[in-house]
Amino acid sequence: MTIAILYEHANFEGDFFVLRSDEMSLADEGWDNKVSSMIVIGGDLNAYKNADYTGETKYFSEGKHYWVGSLWDNEISSVDLWG
Ligand SMILES: [Ca+2]
Ligand SMILES: [Ca+2]
Image (cartoon, rainbow, N blue to C red; front, side, top):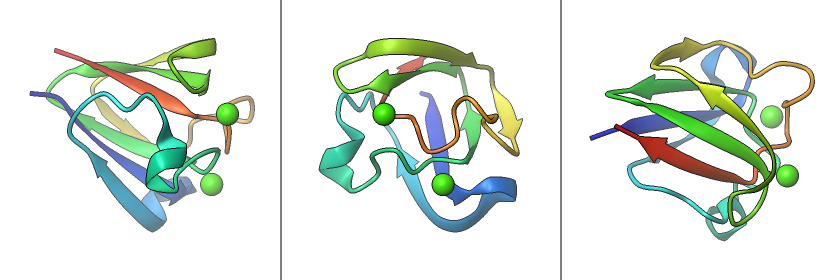
């Protein structure tokens, strides 16, 4: 089972949200366009800039991502977990 811990700020700071299944609308969780860092455990994931797994996508491998990067900061709107 893949789990992703999403953080409001870089370096795993600020509010966090534990994602245990695919989330097609982070807005439903109050997390739209907010993620700045994440930890991925037990698998990997694809993040999307728009809801419903649409728009630009980026792969994040298992492990710690202290920053999602300038092109993805506060942009993620849906997440597809793998593994
Ligand atoms: Ca943020
Ligand atoms: Ca977005």
